[in-house]
Amino acid sequence: MRYSLSGSTGLTWPQIREAAQLGEELGFDGFFAADHLMAVAGFDEDLGLLDAVSLLLALAPVTTTLRLGAMVSPITIRHPVVLARAMQTLDLVSGGRAEVGVGAGWSQSEHEIFGLAFPPAPRRLELLEDACRTLVALWESPDPVHKEGDFPLRGARLSPRPIQRLTPLLVAGASDRAVRIAARWGRAWNATGSPAFLRERVQLLRDEETRASRSGTVEVTATVRLEVCASDGEREAKAQAVRAAPRARYAQREVILAGEDPIAALYIGSLHGLGGYMASLEDVGVQRALISIPRPWDPEELRRLAGAIGLRGAGASAG
Image (cartoon, rainbow, N blue to C red; front, side, top):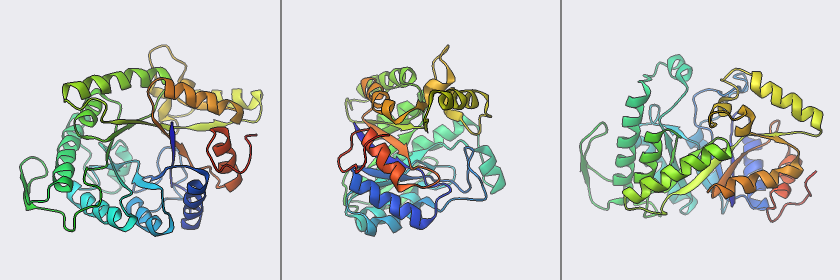
């Protein structure tokens, strides 16, 4: 199992830089910024967040090994041609460490507030597929590209060429259509959910890869929501809070199989149990776990998290 850091909402640039550099030292293999126009998913809007693509470009010169991407860029907000140009630049600046994360978008309120169209889900998924087709065509072709569709190209090409010859495309989404898009176009796929839910989704991904003659091509990644507790009483209180909170704060709790407890889609417990939980994800086919940067930012908490999952370089044992 590989581990990456994720999340930038509510963090300042000095905190993000420190977290990325410390994460690299501890053995995390990547950093994924949140790509939104405002704080979502229960974060305090007053704290806000910095632009994801700008952050990644800023992190490239101050890191050496971390893969750098967004989790993920909504195709309803970032046109694939503009995204391709930004990621081409990131790949060259970072020495070939760019990850191109895309999704169909999910925050309707974010789109409404900033005056952006938010089509129904089937249409957004159509746009996502054509965006993936556009990104791969632009990234991988040395010759001018011509294509039709929602994002047509009329002899377009990326110059200079990115360092990575294959598009480092990560497609996020757990719906059947999103999984099929990832199986056809992605080098990685991301979702969140309970281990049982992810097992079912991974099986669909592998079946769709076979149909697309791409068996074993797509890396399975999962974003893990952590609620670390110091006692059984705190664990139970947090579990009840997750069950009762509005969807905007804990959307993850809905990514479960029928009959499962909503808290199965999160990790709620002590640091001692975190390694076992990660092993359960690996057992269902997850190859890389994305762990949120601690908030409020605490370097020692990140060290403890790294120790709990057995990363090299962790300077402190799990508490």
